Structure formats: C-alpha cells, structure tokens
Amino acid sequence: MIFKDYYRILELETNRVSIDEIKQTYRELAKKYHPDVNISNKFSEERFKDINEAYRVLSNSSSKRKYDRMWNNYVGNKKKKEFEESKRSSDSPVSDFFNMFFGNIREEKEEVLKKNKKPIIKGENIETEVDVSIEEAFYGLSKKISLRTVDGNMKTFSVKVPSGIRDKEKIRLIGQGKEGQNGGKNGDLFIKINIKDNEKFKLNGCNLITNLYLTPWEAALGTRVKIASIDDEVSLYIPEGMQSGEKVRIPQKGYKDGKGGRGDLVAEVKILVPKKLSEEEKKLFEEMSKISKFNPRNIANNK
Image 1 (cartoon, rainbow, N blue to C red):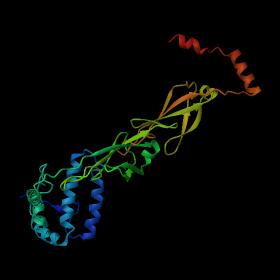
Image 2 (cartoon, helix red, strand yellow):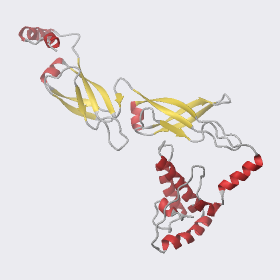
Image 3 (cartoon, rainbow, N blue to C red):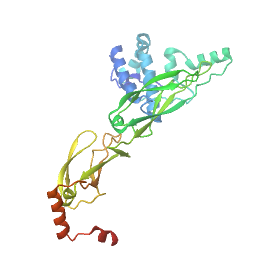
C-alpha cells in the first residue's frame, strides 16, 4: 500500500489546520477541477477524485486524527522518502489507502449486488442545446432551461454558462439525466452551447467581425473614427484611399481565447453614399465629377 499525502493533495503545507480551513481549500480546488468546467480532461478528472478522497478523510475529525498519526510518521518527521500517489484502476472509485479509514466500499457494493441479484444500471445521458448571444457568452450568465422528462413532466434547470465559453462547447450537469436502475447512478445532462451572431458582431474562432461604415470623403481623405468593441470603444485611424471591403484588424479586442488572452476585432469597411443630397452637396459632387479622372470600371476591367 502506498502512503498518500492528503495535505499535499489539498495544497496544504502542514496538518496544523482547522476543519474550516480544510473545507475552504477543498471548495476552491473542487471548483477549479470540477468535471463540469473540465470536460474530457483526464488529468482534471483524476485530480478531482483525489481532492474528494482527501477531503472525506480530513474533514472528519476522527479519521483526521487517525491519518495525522501516519502523516507525522511519514511527513511530519521529515523522513527522506518520496511517495507517489497511487493510480486508480478504471473500475475502482477509491484507493486502498482510503479504505483504511472508511472500509472497503467496493466490497460493500459487491455484497449488495449479491444480495439483490440485480445488475446496477447507470441511467442514460441526455443531450440538449441552448442558444446564447455573443455578448452573453463573452460575459457569462445563468440561464434557465425547461425539458420534458420521461414521465411527461416539465423540469427546469439552472445552467451557469461560464464567461468565454466556446461555440458548440458542452456543459455537463451531473446526475440530471435519466434515472439509474437498481441503485445505479443517474445519467448526466449535456447542454451544447450555440453562440449566435447578431447585427453587430459575428464570431469567427476567437475573432469578432464587425462592420465599419464610412462616407466617401472619409474613405478618400482618411480620418480617425471611434468603433465599439464588445466591451469598450476603440479609436481607429483610417488611412486615405480606404476601399469598401477592406478590413482593419484591432488586436486583443475580440473574443476570449480560453488562455487569458483575446482574439482580434476585425472591422470590414463599407462605404455608404447619402441617398439625399443638399443643393450644396450636389454641386460639390457635380464639380468633382467634372474634374476627377477616376474611373472604377477601368480598374475592375484591368484586373
């Protein structure tokens, strides 16, 4: 049997900590490595199991005293040994070391199976989809969804959509799927998040695409304009001779990339001509048509 340093697993340097301190540390680590926010991450899944195992022993004053005697012998006296955390086999929910404090849970389950003579069946998983806006996905939100259960009744779930979730990413609600049979665990509910574009922004990976509307004279002469990003306003320089369809890239003003950074805000230029002109504006355009030698059709035909 391999000794496991539960204090080290909970990132505590000593056993001289209160039950309240252990609970506080546990809550922080459990939130960080919870399967709901680390889907398909094997390391986080194993880390989460270790954290729960350590907490079950150390949060109980009786088992903590028993464990501390061992801890002082192995770690507290600073013996020069290194201990590897044991790997669990895929069919064992707890380690042999843990069973020292709470008995062999696996054997107890096997005894129950023999008595009942009925196989334990885990409930099926359920999957559904939820649409959210780009702004909702960027900032995160709590959203209520209603689903019809197998018995025909409607059930409402509160779903916390984390800030910066990716399009098509799934949120897992443990135990909210179909009911298990003969003592089996319930299945899980998987909610696929669909991030929907709107008139202001379109999502392309971690980049946000938006339109930048310019007047003909702004595009020709160049200017400085203010453009709204998803969370603030950016001052943007437009060089002279800007063409409709050209794109201006503003770094680190796009969507969250999941690594602490952000993508880019990409502004696509669209030149708009006024539908109604004042007499003075009309004269200016007529004068320009007389003196200008610019012919866009010539440029297009020579491509």
